[in-house]
Image (cartoon, rainbow, N blue to C red; front, side, top):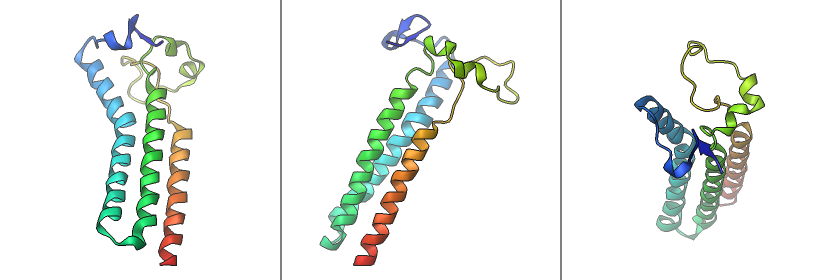
Length: 142
């Protein structure tokens, strides 16, 4: 279980507006981006499935699978980012190795430092690349 300044996640309250803004910004960036992308892909899949004839069925299903996998990757990413503010993360070895952002050396720290989710980015990139190759193959078969 993750604790935030000694509180459980459900009872945690930010101490000031700056911390609340930081929490909202991280939530929009990390969690919201994956969900918005998956919803847009789902909308495209439903459009292809409903508006076009049966030749586009495979394309619609392909985008439907892509949206489901993007939702899954977004869920995994949200699980990883749950401990961004947790008390345990401050003792991480990565916390000691991180470089301070230029201009932010003397500023307040909000949880562990930002580290790009490289594995997640590579997974999404590989997934989209496979879908685009399959899409090209489907279009060339028409």
